[in-house]
Length: 607
Image (spheres, rainbow, N blue to C red):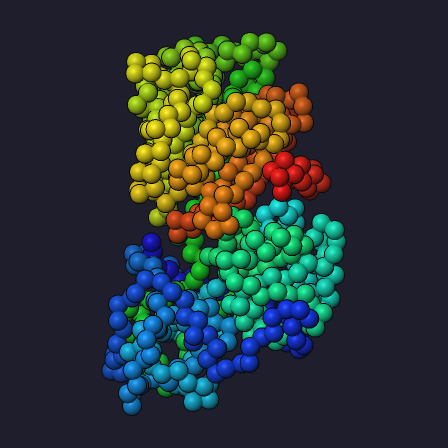
């Protein structure tokens, strides 16, 4: 992992816009009596850091500003220090007096824990402090600068998409109907938050209006409480996102987009270390920098990966004919901008590229498929860089066509999995690494037919072998951050996963897969989570990506799942919802189509 600091030319901090008065809503937890160093008892846990020491004669540090800070690629990203477990020794007469302001993220305050434990720093009130850790203007010269991103969220089952800064401000000051659109019934939602976030909000806005509905809960029950209430929302630091929560856009800006910088995000706050005693400020800052315990941001683009998972690709029949008549890249015309946001992009290519594949017949009743080699350009154009081969049509045109496809993928350095030159090659996992995030892909075909399965002497799809998979998934967990398990299951033209399918997919989650995906579905299916924190994300069927099945609305609807991986952890999933047009071309759903589709899928998920 790498340590960075991010540049900022200008910024608008949401919570500095208003200074509100009032108290907590009736029935919610009242705020504690303010203390001089309210965050000091809450320093975040983490791995122990090298013991910093103060040197009042250290070489001066050139204090960076938000404009001058640039990413550092080589340094390891620090982990917040553990909080004190024993009383600190009496401070020495030379101990630096430190004030930690209300609302500072605990992860930043934790950088001072070793200095406090050793007696080199003593906590103080603001009036007598030599050094302060507090909110600062983005252009303030400081040797330690941090940009902290906060994200509004709703339960994943919600169809809400966007929230406005102005409406958040109105809600906080008591105009609770301002956020009524976040709830299905139009009633004002409850703001459920952790104590950390409550302190951050109050430090900038003072108390919420008396009628503003709020609840303060422990972090581990935040997600289940939001799901229980349904008409509820929250704000969380970026690194505390989890897949059971849906990140909202803010005034149309999507923080999950890799093209969005924190300068464009109106819920970015800036913190830093300042002081009136130059020698004390220098000594404290040098000690923390030497220990590597400072976190310059909680959203570092160099540690973020966008993984896009898609369903069935079958460049044959009417889809192929459209490519011949409208252009090879025609199917990607409307979905290309979404794929441009991906770093690792997957598809299940069910149809082999054959040297002798004939010109396509759009009306052919045959279910024996092939793709012409030139169609491979479509996959390259949209950035496909990992290919699944669990499909039941992989050997339709003979084993020579599949072997030709494998040569094609290898020639362009695209790893494949779920199928291969023989049974051993077919069951081998593919591993991709991006921005320090290592992702393993493994897949199998549970339903055949026999001619599609690989053998010791024949190429084909990997047959599901639970004895092998239980060991291999466990092994992959030791070498990769995220294990994606894909399954070619029975094709079911229904939105819900029946009990047998549900149990089959959960079996692989229980083996340790972080993500379990159904690649077989020509009609999209629902979702499941196996735990509120750290569990698996299951999508029983994504639907077609490129295929000519226009016979029903269900076969025209499709998903592409964009998983946000940060520091080796699945933080969030953004759903692309589309409808296939003209036998070949998925387009984004309209807002009305999307809301109706998501409600259907969520009901089918049992939510």
